[in-house]
Image (cartoon, rainbow over all chains, first blue to last red; front, side):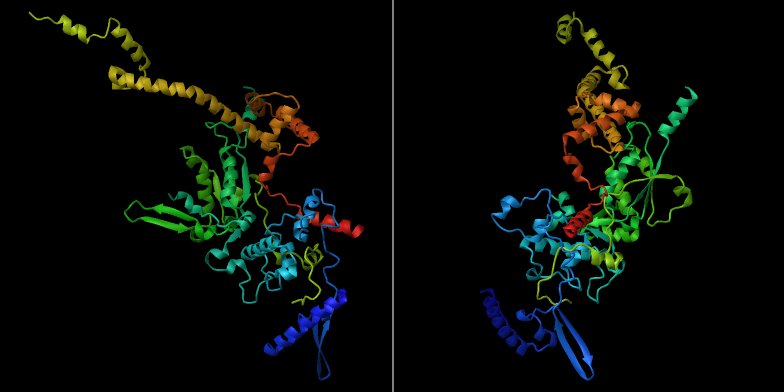
Length: 189
Length: 178
Length: 159
């Protein structure tokens, strides 16, 4: 049952992929995002005169280190009443108090150029995706993840322009505020 | 007064020198703490009229951190007294001109405005960097605890520690690593 | 012939005018200038001073309470405890010391106060009472995020 489903999805996907390839004829794109292939890594190497491009399916490098809420007995798990309503996403289930300075956690949600991964890849709920996305940008602005930035970026925060070169910290409470109140507003009438 | 009592009196009212590292600290939050040490509010013998305040040496004031967009939102007002003499300086401009001014003003404003305030401020030393004159540094006997953790940059953490750190997110099956 | 007595009776405010004014002048004795010599000025200032004195009787108590609070808070900080926790702990262990005696102990008998703080802390510990006021300040302590993660990771690997 499930196999046939996957095959159907694959068919649809591959036809869509063919259509896309006719428009955007790039090497990587023709190989990527096709479901039945399960591609993890693209390797290019030369054998004599031939250029061999092969896609190797690899186990995730994070498999051994992965932390999930099911494996930990959390002291105050509020799963009992929530489980009947909806399964919380893995970040909600862990219940970690992540700050924007926890770069070791935030860097897991980020591409090598420092861009936040989309929700279909991170698999977070909307709220967590928003929260972590904001915290990633906070960390970038504070210059805490400068090795994960595009090549054209000024890596050293001290070399940035004007107010950007001074240290800045952020308050995580402001993430879901509609409007951050201005300091000078309290003097206005 | 016996000799012991006299020495006890000296020891009670002797000034202690504290050092405070401003690196990545919010000046307005840390002013509330530094104020206590300057005015002597941290001693159980405190009285508004007795002179039991301590000396505080602030170092690394160039590396203070402001919250959010306050570097470009917070303005410092000055008026020369002449018509049209008003001027507003943004926090980052002020910090460019004098890296000790923001923290000095923050501490000054955190105290109640009376005649004693000027004298209390005399007991505050602020240095933009880490190099403090020897004659000041030799008096220092205590360090004030910082309010905020100094964040660690990702490129300062060793590579293998980043690799070994427990992971929360795992890539989906068909993800191409970039 | 001039009759002045009726006019003087109208002006006079009674037989004890001197004594009445004398009462006010006595209160204004330490003033300077017309405020002490001229009745109409003196009486205004004396009335104002009496109002201040009435209000100050309350303010003095309030000032002393503020001072005791400052002193106790300072002493509590030395022993790494908040004022709220100290009071809660002492109340729970039936040590009914008021602010005045606590601040006196803090200033004059610091060792006694240290013991009181230890008693309060221990009692709070036994009762499992959590001080909500402590959580407001991060106080530069590591948030232990990494340790939580590591523990979980170690547990997982053991299984």
